[in-house]
Length: 395
Ligand SMILES: Nc1ncnc2c1ncn2[C@@H]1O[C@H](COP(=O)(O)OP(=O)(O)OP(=O)(O)O)[C@@H](O)[C@H]1O
Ligand SMILES: [Mg+2]
Image (tube, rainbow, N blue to C red; front, side):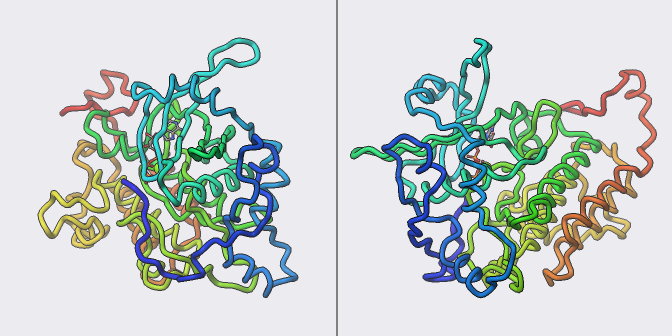
């Protein structure tokens, strides 16, 4: 499912004028890289900054120049070509709206084999460079156990073509989207689902409140951007659409509306006013996807069930019929009271008025409380198996 622009929204405000500022790539990338790339913060940011001169907030671009350049490795295009066997289809892990991702093999200094993931942005996409730059700038600065780690990047401009690549830690368990919606994977247990909710919430909370100098709005929270590590710990990936939050004294950032249908907050779609509470809405959508095992939009369903939020509204958390929305692949193995609590929390995240939505800090606390709730008594069959909480594929 690709990202796209809903509408042009902020007109000229949505353009990202060339700032002339140096990017991390310009600092250390090969000489063939672009040396005057547009700033990802663009006109909107400089406007707010000018009117809030006393604010201590730094720009992501400044932070990236200070920290990202040291943290990130610059890769050679040939090195990435051989690590992916010439971007072989056999090593392709997936494809998104902006490019393809490949498994890549490297050697460490000691000669050990290292597996990483390489994303090659579509050469024809006009958005490509902007997404790439945002990713390099944000992930060069941000560091948290629930964010995917960017190892480095590659930017090469030749007369014939333009190459933009990103190198990440490899996430062996694909995305939450795969595990919720692709029947090839065994269903996630209730506990795994709750732990994924908590980890993803911590990642968003870090973006919103965890970096002292800057607030980050993620803008593309959805199941396919939540990658899972070997222990099914979730990590947010894809910072190509991330934006800096409003500077002091401002309530929102005005921006063109981008994101993915089914996940973007209606107030953001209507006004183009972006706040951290736009991410909170998207989080509420994903909570319901995790509870129900259904995508936010499923055109193959009967009309009244196609839009997930419309359908779950017919079975509110306190109603007798609430169980009807729960993922049948859970096989009834979840504590009902805890599931109702998660649905109540999702409803608060999906509040019409953004100001009334909880902060991600509140969400994390609430989910941690739910985790403490009494687990269901294990079924006899589980006891015999010594069950690890993982559900069988078929029942
Ligand atoms: N670091 C990684 N390690 C392992 N697999 C990855 C990694 N990053 C991405 N992938 C795989 O590549 C797929 C495509 O990722 P990508 O972010 O390009 O697209 P998407 O999230 O599906 O869609 P969108 O472009 O809308 O974000 C992911 O679903 C995932 O399976
Ligand atoms: Mg993605």
